[in-house]
Image (tube, rainbow, N blue to C red; front, side, top):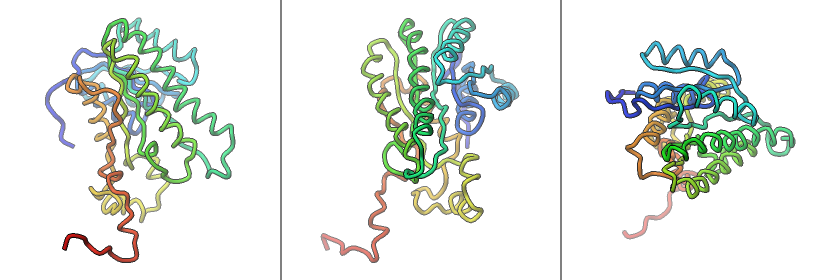
Length: 273
């Protein structure tokens, strides 16, 4: 994808959770390319170090901390370290999430709780800790990565879908409370994205279809992680200064079509003729 030549986030400080691979890694790279220094956060330092290396090789600035965002102690530690280094946090991207569960009749309560602990409680803890600093500076942008699964069912992922709906709802409430302090809160809802997870769960034929002729999606392909990163960067920048409380859907037009007419045995009779 063509890169723009201007740096909208010059001198700003950003935290991206779940930044060791996929969408999170692309977001961290894009924020750094736009001038921000980025703290990449995840459970394992290995993948995070790779993200830092990619950013630095491109001339950006980044550093890494391992943390479990569902732990209050870990969240407090990483927030304190970020503020000790920077004195302020301008951008928070809550990307970390789990997506691994059996169908509804088989999923157990422990799995549901784990999904909520990371996807919802972790997002809450990170947001609250960082927002306290943003409020004191009377500026900041918080972006949750939600999903089109917050808008409708998409396979046997009951807990995951519920957590993403909760994240969208959380953003709306945060918006009402934080706007008066100059802090904006938004979500980006990806559709089907070309990540390792799609490759692992798709047969060669299915993957070829999704990459080259995805008929269910108007643009006929998967979304690239860089396209999600571009949407996040826009919402983080001053170009989106009047945008808050929104769930920006980046799905290639997938949710614009209820896909009812296409599944009928034959075409309906047109009106107005």
